[in-house]
Length: 340
Ligand code: KG4
Ligand code: ZN
Image (cartoon, rainbow, N blue to C red; front, side, top):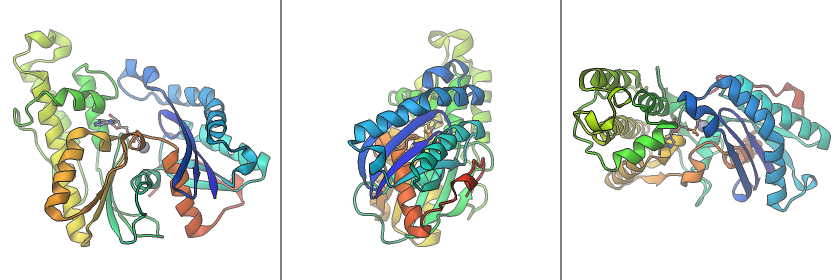
């Protein structure tokens, strides 16, 4: 089955053609980084406007590069949430119009389930339950994923998402946007033990997260020791690389420990880590080490499938179709800001 995937939940306009949920025929992503970087974060109104401009050329390119025609496509899949409502609506309107004009079914996809399926595109799909950490700019959550079932939420962030903490700290330090990539790069030359930042584990068996405390700790650190945005990097009494590496290490510690707790509590050895922050070098290194210690089968998507894309939406749509078939009622498909 050939599925045309469409993704516009945040700041990437993306489309892809994927066969049987696994064979990637084409993949197009139009990034909005240059639009949002002057603001140090995504500006929802600007994101929606940019999606309106990009959505048709991006879909056209994805279909053209797939070697398929619109007639060859069996179904259209679109992200319906969670995400920014104004952004979601653009992708959904395009998907509905294509499905209606071509008389093809429309498959609504949960963005987080999309991220999860990005981990299973390579290699055999899992035949056992997995624990999956979704760690992105909008979400940090643990899911229990059983083959053929809707993923079950085990725990989520009570405040900021991990990627949001990266972005806010980078903004505070005047490092640019998206913050995760800059902090990742700077940390390579930093000492992760230089400074101690708090790790919030909440209760002993809690699978929830909280990253607002560490963000505040960095705010307090720069109040005390100086902020590069006020005094310039050279006059600081510490190395910005050390600050970046110490902050990153604290975030990664929490993510690794919570995922380990979830896998122990659920008794699983299949573990996946997905979402934009899963592109982080130190996070990948630490999860690979933990997988060796615990004997996990670890799935990490390739870097191109960590951040938002439409391959993951088409792949997840194939699973949704296997689970519940097609919904022919395309006009009932709508945007939702919060979902499982
Ligand atoms: O999955 P994604 O593209 O969008 C959401 O669904 O939110 O994730 C974007 C997030 C941003 O917060 C960005 O700073 C973070 O992923 N990110 C990273 C890295 N690359 C992107 N965080 C840490 N290290 C990276 N290498
Ligand atoms: Zn995402």
